[in-house]
Image (cartoon, rainbow, N blue to C red; front, side, top):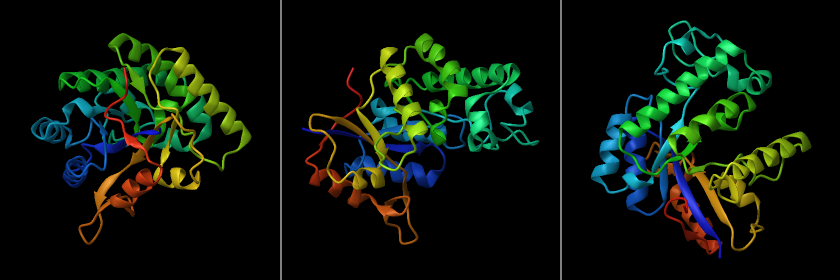
Length: 254
């Protein structure tokens, strides 16, 4: 039996995405979502989660690339923020920065991560699960700062580095495997596989039986008001999982 977590990323980024995530829960398209606490519609997102009965399924979507940071020191770092203080995503787009950042940058990033964690817990959300926007939590320059904070604040589960993906260079495959093993050595609950709808489609049913998979989706509406995962109708995601006889897994098992 394959168990499936379907996570709606980017909760709180906009009113439209919030609405799409609520509808995705109502229709059974997703089992979980993760919240961008630094974005303008985060408060609204939490209110909607509590009103619609899925607050227990809301994790933290750590964000170091979009919107404005919660703290001031990172705004001075050119590889992270523009002159107006908003995130510029520079570090995430350059391999060198994803691997190494300086001491001052590290202190600023650590401060920002902790601020986002503290804001997440201020909402009273119980899931204690973490993933990230643009997968920044899988970057070498970030994970060493993040793990001690996750331990301090009692996180229980974390998203894998993407491994539900066939076309991957050998160095990338080695890094991802090493990273995922590190998470498990640290005692965090993870899925066995993680990827997008397209990744899962490309696997052609080769996911091992008795596996827990996490599928990342980005609920929104297309021009015609249809609920989609970016460009793919959300019903297609559900149909693919049904074809694999995947059983929805509400929340990460503790």
